[in-house]
Length: 313
Ligand SMILES: NC(=O)c1ccc[n+]([C@@H]2O[C@H](COP(=O)([O-])OP(=O)(O)OC[C@H]3O[C@@H](n4cnc5c(N)ncnc54)[C@H](OP(=O)(O)O)[C@@H]3O)[C@@H](O)[C@H]2O)c1
Image 1 (tube, rainbow, N blue to C red):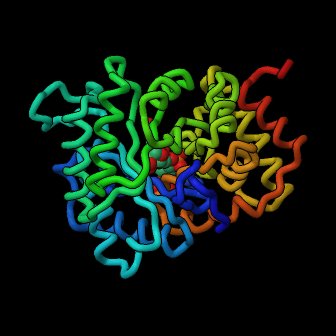
Image 2 (image 1 turned 120 degrees about the vertical axis):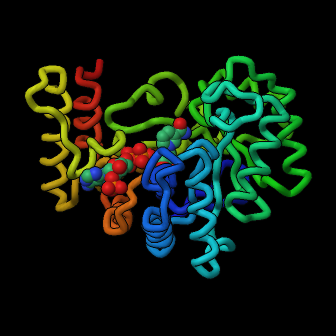
Image 3 (image 1 turned 180 degrees about the vertical axis):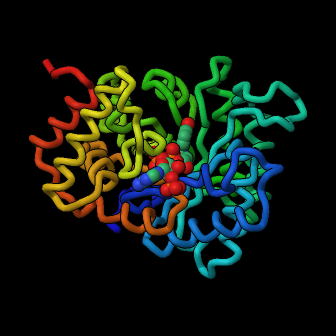
Protein backbone atom coordinates (compact mmCIF):
# COMPACT_ATOMS: atom_id res chain seq x y z
CA UNK A 1 0.00 0.00 0.00
CA UNK A 2 1.02 3.61 -0.46
CA UNK A 3 1.78 5.57 2.67
CA UNK A 4 0.85 8.87 4.32
CA UNK A 5 2.96 10.89 6.72
CA UNK A 6 0.94 11.60 9.87
CA UNK A 7 0.93 15.37 10.15
CA UNK A 8 4.25 16.95 11.01
CA UNK A 9 5.44 13.81 12.79
CA UNK A 10 7.80 11.11 11.61
CA UNK A 11 5.03 8.50 11.81
CA UNK A 12 4.10 6.92 8.51
CA UNK A 13 0.81 5.08 7.93
CA UNK A 14 -0.44 2.83 5.18
CA UNK A 15 -3.14 4.46 3.02
CA UNK A 16 -5.79 2.45 4.92
CA UNK A 17 -5.70 1.86 8.67
CA UNK A 18 -7.08 -1.17 10.45
CA UNK A 19 -9.61 -0.62 13.28
CA UNK A 20 -9.64 -3.03 16.22
CA UNK A 21 -13.03 -2.14 17.74
CA UNK A 22 -14.58 -5.46 16.72
CA UNK A 23 -11.67 -7.86 17.26
CA UNK A 24 -12.91 -9.16 20.63
CA UNK A 25 -15.97 -10.45 18.74
CA UNK A 26 -18.37 -8.94 21.30
CA UNK A 27 -18.86 -5.72 23.29
CA UNK A 28 -19.20 -7.70 26.54
CA UNK A 29 -15.83 -8.69 28.06
CA UNK A 30 -17.38 -11.64 29.94
CA UNK A 31 -18.25 -13.22 26.58
CA UNK A 32 -14.68 -13.16 25.24
CA UNK A 33 -13.38 -16.71 24.92
CA UNK A 34 -10.46 -18.46 23.23
CA UNK A 35 -12.31 -18.87 19.93
CA UNK A 36 -13.25 -15.18 19.71
CA UNK A 37 -9.71 -14.16 20.63
CA UNK A 38 -8.28 -16.45 17.94
CA UNK A 39 -10.61 -14.90 15.34
CA UNK A 40 -9.53 -11.40 16.42
CA UNK A 41 -5.85 -12.33 16.26
CA UNK A 42 -6.39 -13.77 12.75
CA UNK A 43 -8.03 -10.52 11.63
CA UNK A 44 -5.13 -8.41 12.93
CA UNK A 45 -2.59 -10.76 11.34
CA UNK A 46 -4.49 -10.62 8.03
CA UNK A 47 -4.42 -6.82 8.11
CA UNK A 48 -0.69 -6.80 8.83
CA UNK A 49 0.03 -9.28 6.04
CA UNK A 50 -2.12 -7.20 3.64
CA UNK A 51 0.08 -4.15 4.30
CA UNK A 52 -1.86 -2.15 6.91
CA UNK A 53 0.62 -0.41 9.21
CA UNK A 54 -1.65 1.79 11.36
CA UNK A 55 -3.76 -0.10 13.92
CA UNK A 56 -6.41 1.88 15.78
CA UNK A 57 -7.77 0.82 19.15
CA UNK A 58 -9.32 2.34 22.31
CA UNK A 59 -9.37 1.41 25.97
CA UNK A 60 -13.17 1.42 25.85
CA UNK A 61 -13.48 -1.22 23.08
CA UNK A 62 -14.95 -4.22 24.86
CA UNK A 63 -13.67 -2.61 28.05
CA UNK A 64 -10.04 -3.35 27.29
CA UNK A 65 -10.48 -6.74 25.63
CA UNK A 66 -9.71 -5.35 22.15
CA UNK A 67 -6.37 -4.01 23.38
CA UNK A 68 -5.64 -7.35 25.06
CA UNK A 69 -6.51 -9.26 21.87
CA UNK A 70 -4.34 -6.90 19.86
CA UNK A 71 -1.47 -7.49 22.32
CA UNK A 72 -1.85 -11.21 21.74
CA UNK A 73 -1.57 -10.67 18.00
CA UNK A 74 1.65 -8.69 18.56
CA UNK A 75 3.06 -11.62 20.51
CA UNK A 76 2.10 -14.13 17.85
CA UNK A 77 3.14 -12.27 14.71
CA UNK A 78 6.90 -12.04 14.69
CA UNK A 79 8.36 -8.62 13.87
CA UNK A 80 4.98 -6.88 13.67
CA UNK A 81 5.51 -4.39 16.51
CA UNK A 82 8.59 -2.87 14.90
CA UNK A 83 6.86 -2.31 11.55
CA UNK A 84 3.56 -0.75 12.61
CA UNK A 85 2.10 2.30 14.33
CA UNK A 86 -0.05 1.53 17.36
CA UNK A 87 -2.84 4.02 17.93
CA UNK A 88 -5.26 3.96 20.82
CA UNK A 89 -7.55 6.35 22.68
CA UNK A 90 -8.64 7.40 26.13
CA UNK A 91 -11.00 9.90 27.68
CA UNK A 92 -14.16 7.86 28.26
CA UNK A 93 -14.38 6.34 31.71
CA UNK A 94 -14.82 2.59 31.70
CA UNK A 95 -17.24 0.65 33.88
CA UNK A 96 -14.50 -0.40 36.31
CA UNK A 97 -13.07 3.12 36.73
CA UNK A 98 -12.31 3.76 40.41
CA UNK A 99 -14.03 7.14 40.11
CA UNK A 100 -17.20 5.47 38.76
CA UNK A 101 -19.58 7.19 36.34
CA UNK A 102 -18.94 4.92 33.38
CA UNK A 103 -19.24 6.49 29.96
CA UNK A 104 -18.67 10.01 31.17
CA UNK A 105 -15.90 11.88 29.46
CA UNK A 106 -12.76 12.57 31.46
CA UNK A 107 -9.72 14.38 30.10
CA UNK A 108 -8.17 15.15 33.48
CA UNK A 109 -4.40 14.61 33.63
CA UNK A 110 -4.79 11.78 36.14
CA UNK A 111 -7.23 9.96 33.92
CA UNK A 112 -5.10 10.35 30.77
CA UNK A 113 -1.90 9.14 32.44
CA UNK A 114 -3.59 6.23 34.22
CA UNK A 115 -5.47 5.14 31.07
CA UNK A 116 -2.27 5.22 29.05
CA UNK A 117 -0.45 3.02 31.55
CA UNK A 118 -3.30 0.50 31.53
CA UNK A 119 -3.39 0.44 27.72
CA UNK A 120 0.37 -0.17 27.55
CA UNK A 121 -0.02 -3.06 29.97
CA UNK A 122 -2.96 -4.63 28.11
CA UNK A 123 -1.14 -4.47 24.77
CA UNK A 124 2.18 -5.53 26.29
CA UNK A 125 4.16 -2.69 24.69
CA UNK A 126 6.49 0.02 25.97
CA UNK A 127 5.21 2.82 23.76
CA UNK A 128 2.00 3.91 22.05
CA UNK A 129 2.81 5.61 18.75
CA UNK A 130 -0.34 7.71 18.54
CA UNK A 131 -2.50 8.53 21.57
CA UNK A 132 -5.85 10.20 20.93
CA UNK A 133 -8.50 11.85 23.09
CA UNK A 134 -11.60 9.86 22.14
CA UNK A 135 -14.37 12.45 22.51
CA UNK A 136 -14.62 16.16 23.31
CA UNK A 137 -14.91 16.61 27.07
CA UNK A 138 -16.85 19.79 27.85
CA UNK A 139 -14.85 20.12 31.07
CA UNK A 140 -11.48 19.78 29.31
CA UNK A 141 -8.73 22.14 30.50
CA UNK A 142 -6.31 22.47 27.58
CA UNK A 143 -3.23 23.29 29.75
CA UNK A 144 -3.92 20.25 31.93
CA UNK A 145 -4.19 17.94 28.90
CA UNK A 146 -1.00 19.46 27.47
CA UNK A 147 0.78 18.71 30.77
CA UNK A 148 -0.34 15.08 30.71
CA UNK A 149 0.71 14.70 27.06
CA UNK A 150 4.13 16.19 27.80
CA UNK A 151 4.65 13.88 30.76
CA UNK A 152 3.75 10.79 28.71
CA UNK A 153 6.05 11.89 25.91
CA UNK A 154 8.96 12.58 28.25
CA UNK A 155 8.48 9.19 29.89
CA UNK A 156 8.65 7.53 26.45
CA UNK A 157 5.14 6.11 26.85
CA UNK A 158 3.69 7.97 23.84
CA UNK A 159 5.30 9.27 20.67
CA UNK A 160 2.58 11.45 19.13
CA UNK A 161 -0.88 12.77 20.01
CA UNK A 162 -4.17 13.41 18.29
CA UNK A 163 -7.87 13.86 18.94
CA UNK A 164 -11.10 12.29 17.81
CA UNK A 165 -14.51 13.81 17.12
CA UNK A 166 -13.16 17.30 17.84
CA UNK A 167 -14.58 20.44 16.23
CA UNK A 168 -11.95 22.63 14.54
CA UNK A 169 -12.30 25.29 17.25
CA UNK A 170 -11.80 22.81 20.10
CA UNK A 171 -8.78 21.31 18.36
CA UNK A 172 -7.33 24.82 18.01
CA UNK A 173 -8.00 25.57 21.69
CA UNK A 174 -6.10 22.45 22.72
CA UNK A 175 -3.31 22.95 20.18
CA UNK A 176 -2.65 26.46 21.52
CA UNK A 177 -1.53 24.90 24.80
CA UNK A 178 0.29 21.82 23.49
CA UNK A 179 4.03 22.03 22.81
CA UNK A 180 3.70 19.18 20.31
CA UNK A 181 1.56 19.20 17.14
CA UNK A 182 -1.70 17.29 17.26
CA UNK A 183 -1.33 15.12 14.19
CA UNK A 184 -4.76 13.54 13.57
CA UNK A 185 -8.45 14.18 14.08
CA UNK A 186 -10.39 10.92 13.91
CA UNK A 187 -13.90 11.58 12.61
CA UNK A 188 -16.94 9.73 11.33
CA UNK A 189 -16.63 10.32 7.60
CA UNK A 190 -18.45 8.33 4.92
CA UNK A 191 -21.07 8.82 2.26
CA UNK A 192 -23.79 8.84 4.90
CA UNK A 193 -21.95 11.25 7.23
CA UNK A 194 -20.72 14.32 5.40
CA UNK A 195 -20.58 16.98 8.12
CA UNK A 196 -16.80 17.28 8.19
CA UNK A 197 -16.78 18.37 4.52
CA UNK A 198 -18.91 21.40 5.39
CA UNK A 199 -18.19 22.36 8.99
CA UNK A 200 -14.55 23.35 8.54
CA UNK A 201 -13.05 20.18 10.02
CA UNK A 202 -11.43 18.92 6.83
CA UNK A 203 -10.50 22.51 5.88
CA UNK A 204 -8.58 22.76 9.16
CA UNK A 205 -6.87 19.43 8.50
CA UNK A 206 -5.63 20.71 5.13
CA UNK A 207 -4.59 24.10 6.53
CA UNK A 208 -2.67 22.64 9.47
CA UNK A 209 -1.41 19.42 7.91
CA UNK A 210 -3.51 17.32 10.31
CA UNK A 211 -4.48 13.91 8.95
CA UNK A 212 -8.18 12.97 9.14
CA UNK A 213 -8.76 9.34 10.11
CA UNK A 214 -12.20 8.20 8.95
CA UNK A 215 -13.97 5.94 11.42
CA UNK A 216 -16.75 3.59 10.26
CA UNK A 217 -15.91 4.27 6.60
CA UNK A 218 -18.72 1.90 5.58
CA UNK A 219 -21.13 3.51 8.04
CA UNK A 220 -20.70 0.45 10.25
CA UNK A 221 -21.45 -1.87 7.31
CA UNK A 222 -24.43 -0.57 5.33
CA UNK A 223 -22.23 1.01 2.65
CA UNK A 224 -20.43 -2.32 2.13
CA UNK A 225 -21.48 -5.01 -0.33
CA UNK A 226 -23.54 -7.07 2.08
CA UNK A 227 -24.90 -4.00 3.85
CA UNK A 228 -28.67 -4.11 4.05
CA UNK A 229 -31.17 -1.31 4.41
CA UNK A 230 -34.87 -1.82 5.00
CA UNK A 231 -36.25 -1.19 1.52
CA UNK A 232 -39.82 -1.06 2.82
CA UNK A 233 -39.05 1.80 5.19
CA UNK A 234 -39.84 5.09 3.38
CA UNK A 235 -37.18 6.86 5.48
CA UNK A 236 -34.55 4.62 3.87
CA UNK A 237 -35.44 5.64 0.32
CA UNK A 238 -32.38 7.90 0.09
CA UNK A 239 -30.07 5.13 1.30
CA UNK A 240 -31.48 2.68 -1.23
CA UNK A 241 -30.85 5.24 -3.98
CA UNK A 242 -27.30 5.78 -2.68
CA UNK A 243 -26.59 2.05 -2.66
CA UNK A 244 -28.00 1.68 -6.18
CA UNK A 245 -25.81 4.47 -7.51
CA UNK A 246 -22.80 3.01 -5.71
CA UNK A 247 -23.48 -0.41 -7.27
CA UNK A 248 -23.80 1.17 -10.73
CA UNK A 249 -20.51 3.09 -10.49
CA UNK A 250 -18.74 0.17 -8.80
CA UNK A 251 -19.99 -2.22 -11.49
CA UNK A 252 -18.71 0.03 -14.29
CA UNK A 253 -15.28 0.15 -12.59
CA UNK A 254 -15.36 -3.62 -11.88
CA UNK A 255 -14.91 -3.11 -8.16
CA UNK A 256 -17.07 -3.89 -5.15
CA UNK A 257 -19.31 -1.37 -3.42
CA UNK A 258 -16.99 -1.52 -0.38
CA UNK A 259 -13.96 -0.63 -2.47
CA UNK A 260 -15.86 2.25 -4.08
CA UNK A 261 -16.88 3.63 -0.65
CA UNK A 262 -13.24 3.61 0.46
CA UNK A 263 -11.88 5.05 -2.78
CA UNK A 264 -14.39 7.90 -2.51
CA UNK A 265 -12.77 8.86 0.82
CA UNK A 266 -9.24 8.43 -0.53
CA UNK A 267 -9.84 10.95 -3.31
CA UNK A 268 -10.26 13.90 -0.93
CA UNK A 269 -7.18 16.17 -0.87
CA UNK A 270 -6.94 16.17 2.94
CA UNK A 271 -5.52 12.62 2.62
CA UNK A 272 -8.24 10.92 4.64
CA UNK A 273 -7.13 7.54 6.02
CA UNK A 274 -10.18 5.24 6.22
CA UNK A 275 -10.09 2.88 9.22
CA UNK A 276 -11.30 -0.49 7.94
CA UNK A 277 -13.30 -2.31 10.62
CA UNK A 278 -14.09 -5.72 9.12
CA UNK A 279 -12.88 -8.80 10.98
CA UNK A 280 -13.21 -10.94 7.85
CA UNK A 281 -9.69 -11.60 6.44
CA UNK A 282 -10.91 -11.68 2.83
CA UNK A 283 -12.69 -8.31 3.21
CA UNK A 284 -9.67 -6.86 4.99
CA UNK A 285 -7.45 -7.88 2.05
CA UNK A 286 -9.82 -6.82 -0.72
CA UNK A 287 -10.29 -3.34 0.80
CA UNK A 288 -6.67 -2.55 -0.11
CA UNK A 289 -7.58 -2.39 -3.81
CA UNK A 290 -9.40 0.89 -3.06
CA UNK A 291 -6.24 2.88 -3.71
CA UNK A 292 -6.06 1.58 -7.28
CA UNK A 293 -9.46 3.07 -8.20
CA UNK A 294 -9.23 6.35 -10.05
CA UNK A 295 -12.65 7.83 -9.43
CA UNK A 296 -13.59 10.60 -11.83
CA UNK A 297 -14.53 14.03 -10.48
CA UNK A 298 -17.97 13.54 -12.00
CA UNK A 299 -18.60 10.23 -10.23
CA UNK A 300 -17.22 11.62 -6.96
CA UNK A 301 -19.76 14.45 -7.05
CA UNK A 302 -22.62 12.16 -8.14
CA UNK A 303 -21.93 10.06 -5.04
CA UNK A 304 -21.70 13.19 -2.86
CA UNK A 305 -25.10 14.37 -4.06
CA UNK A 306 -26.62 10.92 -3.46
CA UNK A 307 -25.09 10.86 0.05
CA UNK A 308 -26.41 14.37 0.83
CA UNK A 309 -29.80 13.38 -0.55
CA UNK A 310 -30.13 16.89 -1.96
CA UNK A 311 -28.47 18.72 -4.82
CA UNK A 312 -25.40 20.86 -4.25
CA UNK A 313 -25.87 24.62 -4.79
N1 LIG B 1 -13.23 7.54 17.21
C1 LIG B 1 -14.44 7.05 17.33
O1 LIG B 1 -15.31 7.64 17.98
C2 LIG B 1 -14.75 5.75 16.63
C3 LIG B 1 -16.07 5.26 16.60
C4 LIG B 1 -16.30 4.06 15.92
C5 LIG B 1 -15.25 3.39 15.29
N2 LIG B 1 -13.98 3.89 15.37
C6 LIG B 1 -12.84 3.24 14.68
O2 LIG B 1 -13.21 2.93 13.35
C7 LIG B 1 -12.96 1.56 13.09
C8 LIG B 1 -13.88 1.04 12.03
O3 LIG B 1 -15.24 1.19 12.43
P1 LIG B 1 -16.33 0.15 11.93
O4 LIG B 1 -15.96 -1.22 12.34
O5 LIG B 1 -17.66 0.67 12.30
O6 LIG B 1 -16.07 0.28 10.33
P2 LIG B 1 -16.89 -0.11 9.04
O7 LIG B 1 -15.85 -0.61 8.08
O8 LIG B 1 -17.75 1.03 8.65
O9 LIG B 1 -17.85 -1.29 9.46
C9 LIG B 1 -17.37 -2.58 9.73
C10 LIG B 1 -18.58 -3.49 9.88
O10 LIG B 1 -19.18 -3.64 8.60
C11 LIG B 1 -19.28 -5.00 8.30
N3 LIG B 1 -19.02 -5.20 6.89
C12 LIG B 1 -18.00 -4.71 6.17
N4 LIG B 1 -18.08 -5.12 4.89
C13 LIG B 1 -19.14 -5.90 4.83
C14 LIG B 1 -19.73 -6.62 3.81
N5 LIG B 1 -19.22 -6.63 2.56
N6 LIG B 1 -20.83 -7.32 4.09
C15 LIG B 1 -21.34 -7.33 5.32
N7 LIG B 1 -20.82 -6.68 6.37
C16 LIG B 1 -19.74 -5.96 6.11
C17 LIG B 1 -18.19 -5.68 9.09
O11 LIG B 1 -18.52 -7.05 9.28
P3 LIG B 1 -17.39 -8.19 9.10
O12 LIG B 1 -16.47 -8.05 10.27
O13 LIG B 1 -18.16 -9.45 9.11
O14 LIG B 1 -16.72 -7.93 7.78
C18 LIG B 1 -18.20 -4.89 10.37
O15 LIG B 1 -19.22 -5.35 11.24
C19 LIG B 1 -13.10 0.90 14.47
O16 LIG B 1 -12.47 -0.36 14.55
C20 LIG B 1 -12.42 1.93 15.34
O17 LIG B 1 -11.02 1.77 15.24
C21 LIG B 1 -13.73 5.05 16.02
